[in-house]
Length: 171
Image (cartoon, rainbow, N blue to C red; front, side):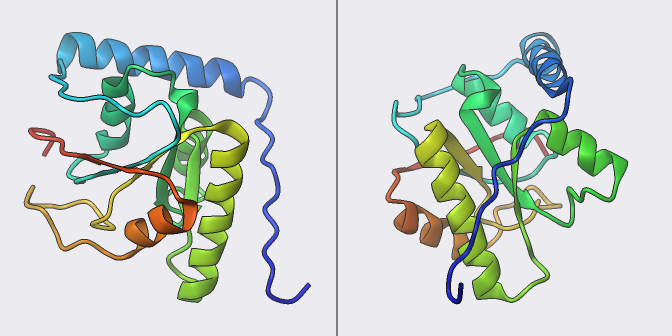
């Protein structure tokens, strides 16, 4: 059908639930013992778009731990090519974190429409919070980079509140 996008439900591979729970336990232990978090504020009860600076590979996980909610309450928006199904690390990461892949290589509007459709479906069906990094990439210096328009567009398209977050000291 012309002008429509179909989002197919993803089924978790066997054992994925155990891997996800084990990773969540590991992450909570890591941030409780090795790198304790100081948290100010909280998330709304309804789905939201958490927008944060991005200086570390652990930023998304730190945000989920800081929220105090089960990791299944979140979907992490991330570059599809970075978390490719083709690589072992990509499959492993997608297996333990529910990642909504953002295709940076295809036509911009088709990619954005696909991302909005997938986010809309998962937010409505599962009532989850989305985590996005408006800078579009990790900062190698620790300084905030200019924001891209995608996160703002996504928040408006989904009609969810934006929760600003700032991670300090992860660089």
